Length: 115
Length: 113
Image 1 (cartoon, each protein chain N blue to C red):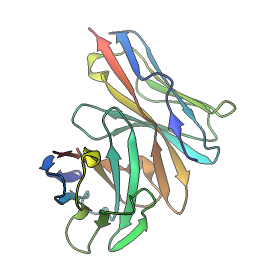
Image 2 (image 1 turned 60 degrees about the horizontal axis):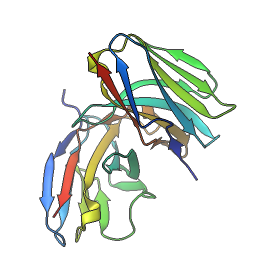
Image 3 (image 1 turned 45 degrees about the vertical axis):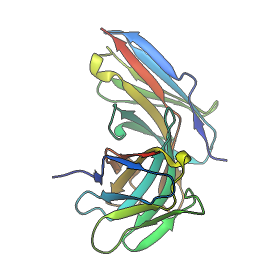
């Protein structure tokens, strides 16, 4: 009966490296959402995915960021050539349906630090 | 654009007192609103929601009030306990092709024992 699992919990990368953040949704949930939270700020929407499809990526930076949710396995948020400004907590949520925001389950996040 | 903002960034209350956290929103097309609680090191946790056709909803120790005229939302916590210490976010849910949740910046609630 696991909730949304995100790993790693903490990730340190040097500038220019790649960061891969993984999110395993609640079993049976096929809708995944990624949010970014800067220190002392609210969560900012990044992308919404269903299995093998990106539905809304309006919050994703145009460069260096990509997301996928393959048929098998976790959803991946990938940040290439990280910069200091990418340091943040990245949260994933999942839901069983697309119209059930009250049913979002959030993971505990991955805290990315770029040094 | 879409935005949800809060009046007070921090709030300190005495244990046992009632807490009121306020929120302003700008999008008139929001279908409903959600309050989340985020404890340190954790993800947001759903507390209560309210539909746009309602002006009040009560849960266990919590009440949410919605004033659409002035686009204002509040969360009232009765008999605040130390375990209520957290950051609270209001969020609006936009009816796009899916339920899209837009978060406000948050209020940090600190309960003084």
